Amino acid sequence: MKGKKLQEKNKINLQLKNKKIVQKLKEKGITLIALVITIIILLILAGVTLNMALSGEGLFSKAKLAVNKYDVASEQEVLQQIIIEYNMDNTIEKIGEKLSDKGSGTDDNWEVIQLNNSNKNYGTNYYYIEKGKEISNYGKTKYNWVINYETGEIINIEDYTKIDGTAGLAVPEDIVLNINPLNLGDETSWGERSNI
Image (cartoon, rainbow, N blue to C red):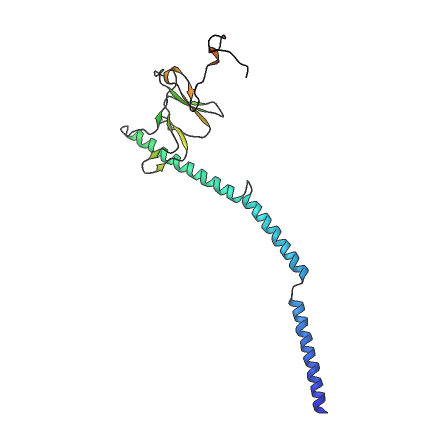
């Protein structure tokens, strides 16, 4: 009898232990609803993070802009150093293509850079440095520049037209002929007029 009671007591103790273990597992476990909510929150956070990183005002755009500004500043610093070296020792050769305004004594061969957004011209006393120009101790330029050795002015130019006045014709770069409208006074001077 004692053995039977002992077995029943052990069986009841085992069932109680199993119930406690199951209860603890239920308390420590995660429900399906909690798991779904957690996944949804993580997806929302991932979407917001990607939007911040990839949008027009995102991290990648800002990083690209910062690299661009650094490159411009680095190149500008090299050009400033060249201007300073030239002003200290005039025997150093100027870099860039010399520009000159029409009527500056070189009427037959003049060349200016005109900014398209402001129509500002750079001619006499300015030098044009085209993108890809090799500069010693620096390498090739990544941007187009107009510099003035006398004033130390350095301008990074992007949207511009190079106007060449060779042989009396003002011909912008990549344009075959730029006709002055004053020459269209009558229909016999330049052919038929057309309203465009």
